[in-house]
Amino acid sequence: MSAKSFRLLHAANLQLDCPLRGAGLQNDEIRDILDAATLTAFERIVTIAIEKDVDGVLITGNTFDASFASLAAEVAMREGFSRLADHNIPVFITPGEMDPDAAWLDLPRLPDNVTLFTDVTDPPVDLTSHGHLLATLFPVTATTSIEPEELANILGGRTTSKGNRPFVVGMLLSGSAGGPKDARKSKQNRFAALDWVVCHEGTNADSLPLTDGHAHMQSAPQGLDRSETGARGVTLLEVDSARKTKLTKIPVAPVRWETIVQPIDHVKDREALLERMLGQLERLPNFHGELVRIIDWKLDRTSGEANGWESDTAAKELGEALTELSDQPDGLRYVHRVSALEPDLTLIEPAHREVLTEYLLALERRAPSKQADFAKWIAEARVGDLVNSGRWEQWSESLQPQQVTERAQQLGWKWFATIGKK
Image (cartoon, rainbow, N blue to C red; front, side, top):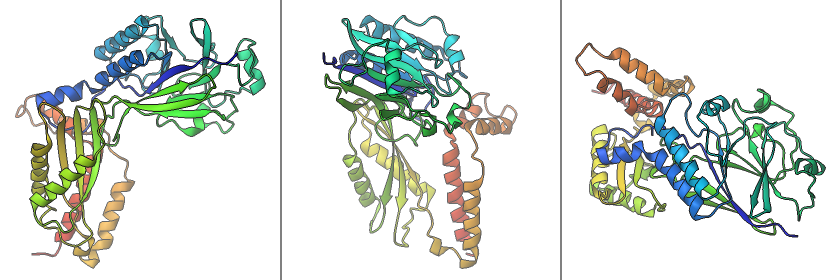
């Protein structure tokens, strides 16, 4: 008897109610979208699962941040799981670094359609539909060993012939979950006869068992900062009766980050540059459901002509003009940030170039500061009662380590470019 076709939806790194970083100060309408972005993405995932009539939802790692007790995250998660339960859709979850198994076990009882894998000894779960066995899911680590002939025992004695045995899915346990603490560092990864292994993006490949099946690392459904660009969403796995698989990426992120390099060679004036930049925007692919685009522009050149674009003020005014031209208050919202042009190395005195190179290398070598460091420094720098408590500390939200490093690089270029000039 041939297998029955089925669908699974894979999501990871939901990070429910975690704030988007580096978006800067925005108006209330855009800020509301940014603040609810991860919750909106999760709500869309649940809706897609229902509309696609999937047979199961897999969520691998970092569903929430256990260090930040968010009631909104817990409520959204519970409501989403309950909606899926109303449509008889089971949910299978593995913890991650941000949401270790202890944090999940501290939560009030989850809906009955939720299975939480926390240890490699947790028993396999059969996924069925109207009495038909579709797939078997179980937790794995790098040291999980399953030879093909052992599947009969795992699958309860069912045949392991390729045509009849169920589709076998391994859900990777990472972080503090399941199995030896040194599993991610183990050099003795074992072979596991799996059809599909799922985990979250960023997982070290050494933490996966050896398998001839497909290993799928799922990215977050909503990018949290400008390093997570492009389409963000979930993956739909469709397996037909002949066991052929099809993967479809489905975007769900309401906020989209993009970084665009804009050449300025042979640009006559600001209007011509704006026209070029608008042309780049028109060539960007559109993703269903996006509400806000945050675009970081980097001006670039091959000639020595800067034409004033090395000025921070000019770059800021360019970004504001671009936002005014592209933003749609009744539709897709835009936020444009333009970085000033870096000075040409040939403009720097030969005697100073080596010093500049050492300066830039020092920035790259130093341990990067974290958001918490900026918050601490800003709190310590607050002068008496000159600024209301809270508002001063909020400024740290607009300071991102990557942006500060880039700013330090730009200032270094400018300082060395002006040495010895009157």
